[in-house]
Length: 562
Image 1 (tube, helix red, strand yellow):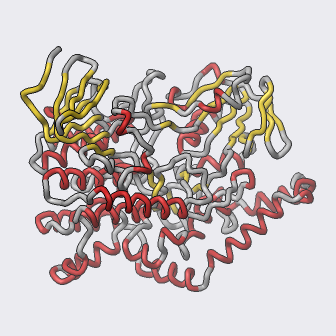
Image 2 (cartoon, one colour; image 1 turned 90 degrees about the horizontal axis):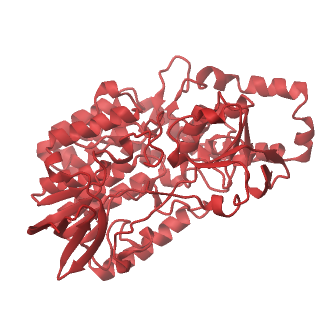
Image 3 (tube, helix red, strand yellow; image 1 turned 90 degrees about the vertical axis):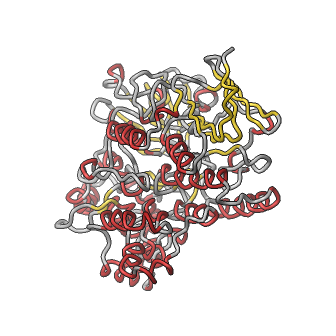
C-alpha cells in the first residue's frame, strides 16, 4: 500500500467543492501545510454539473438562489457580467478562476475518495480508495449535504404506489417519458421550483404538495413599474438590520416581501395560498427564494396541496378530503447528512457541534458548510467558518475549552429551537445568517471594528453600514484590505436602498404596518378556508374580482423576477 507517511499535514480538507476550496485557500493564507482530498475528477462539488443521474449535482436549469453580493467570496468578487443570480456554468467557471488565482489545484488530490479516518497518538490517519494513506494534525470536513437523498417517503407512505417515483437529486432535466403525465412534486424548497420550471409545459397536471407549509419570496423586488428590479436579499445592510431586524421578522419591510412576491399585501407568508400556510413567523422558517413558481398556481395548471393521509395504487388522498390520481412522484425532500468515514465516536448530530462546526470532544475535527441560512448563502457562512478554524489551527485565535463549548452548545440549541419553534426542523442546522455570521466573526476576531473605522475613515464607515451583506465586510479590520473591501461594498450598494427608503421603512415599522397586514392576512386565510368560500369561489364575479386583484402581480412580477 502506498503511503504519504513522510508528510504530516497541518490540515487535510475532505471535499473539493466551494467550502473545500475556501478551506484550502485560508489554510494557505495562515501558512499551514494543507492537502485537499476530492473523490471526483474535478473541483466544484455539486456545481460541477453532470448529466449522470447517479452523480448528485445541480439541475441543468439551476441558478444560485442567493444574489452574487451575498454569494461571492470576500476577496474574490464575481464579475459584473455574471449577473445577480449566476447559472451553474458561471459558478463552476468562477470557482475554477478562484482556484487558479490562489494556486489551489496543486494542493488537491482528485479522484481520491476517503474510506476511513482514525486518530492515533494525536495524529489523524486517512485511508483512501486508491491505496494512499494520508496523515495530518487536523481534519476539515467539507463533504457537503448533497450526498444521501432523503427517500423515506418512498419506503413508507408511498411503499405501495403503482407509479414512478424519483428523487430530484437523480433528475437533471425534464424526462420525455413524463410528457402528458400527471405529476406530483413533494417539497417546498428551491429544487421543487426548478422542477416546476422544467415540467410545467409538458405535463397534463401537476400537484404541488408541501406537507409542512412554506414561506416564499422572489429573488427580485420591484415596487414600482419605472424602477429596475433589485435583488431582494441585498436589503441587508447594517443600518437596515437595526431599523428592521431579521430576528424580529423584518418589521417595516416584511410587507415589501409580500407585495413583490404575490402582488398583495395580504399574501401571508409570501404566498397567500391556504394549502401552503404554516404557523411560523416571517424569517423564522426556511424561505424559498424561487417564488416565481407560485405563478404556475395562478395559471391553474398547478394544484397546491398540503399533507397526505394515504396512497392507494395511483391515487393520493390528502388531509383536506380531496384525492388525485398521479402517474409520477418527484421527491424534493432534500438529503440526509452522512459522513460514513468518521469513527463512531465522532459521529453526532450536527447540532451537537460547537457553532455547528467543531466537535467538542476533539477540536482537531471540524465541519464546514453544513449550516444553512434562511436567507443569504451557504458559501458566505462557510467562508467565515473556515477563516475561523484556520486561524485557530495557526494559533492566531484561541479555541474555547470543552466546558465552554458544551455550555455554548446548550445555549445555542435553546436559542435556535426557540427561534424555529414552529418549523419542521427537517433542516436542523438552519440559522438566521447574519446573526450566525456575526457570532462566528466575533470569536475569530473578524467582526468589523466600526468605531475605529469611523475615526480613520468616516466616509468609509458610512459606506460599510449602508452596504448590503457581503463577505468583504469582514475584511475591514485588516487595513491592507480596507480600500478593496470598501470599493466592493460600494459597488454592491449601487441601486439598493437609499436614505429615503430607510426613513420610509422606519415609519412603516413605527406605525406597525406589518402587524396590520398580518391581521388582514389572517382574515383572508379564515375566509379562504371557510365553507362559504368553497361554495362561492367559482362564481364568475368572484373570478373577475380575483383577476383584477392579481393585475399588479401580472404586470410587475410574472416572468419578470426570475
